[in-house]
Length: 266
Image (cartoon, rainbow, N blue to C red; front, side):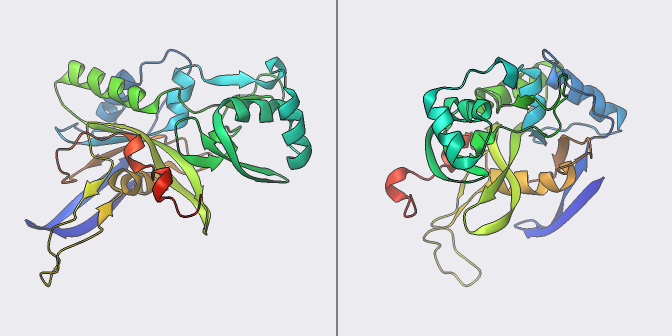
């Protein structure tokens, strides 16, 4: 499955190619994601080049790192029971949401919006049941990686050690947005690439100097890759991206979080 995006850069027309990596295996705790990426891209006839990017669904990282929890093992707190009563959610799930969050931003029956401990705002602290093996009913949930930036750095370093190629890594989750319907791919961890591309001071087509243009590069790539990953039973959690021309900036996911003092809607 491939998606080609045509654009016009300083060197003229160029193309960016996104390819969902086929036959990606089911991930279990302890799996070596870097080795699997190298092997599956090779089997698909994709040659990894310097500067390529891999976009990875967070669930394969979480599974490899053992970030699944059986709700039968969770003991809810009094606060969890209180929030569960207001939101009509399982108190055990609410307890995990509270543990993974800095604070609750909004809640209503069926939904809890939190500021995650990693700093971004999302539903249910990113905890999900979809695409998670269920050993005992519908009781197993998956958490976000403990430190997605660190996870991305380790995969980047491992690939470089194995094949002497430096590639960017983006860890992707699906987030909703306050004023628009639908979820979209969002970068929650990255390595060896910019999160933001600050273009302030550059000139537009008519010579106007850009004043406020900071491009959410990592989120744009995450959203494009998410089209190929899918949300249901596609089974394509890894996307190989080639042809992008990015500035040599080392970013992290925290670069994308708006500071509280600049958040007019907080």
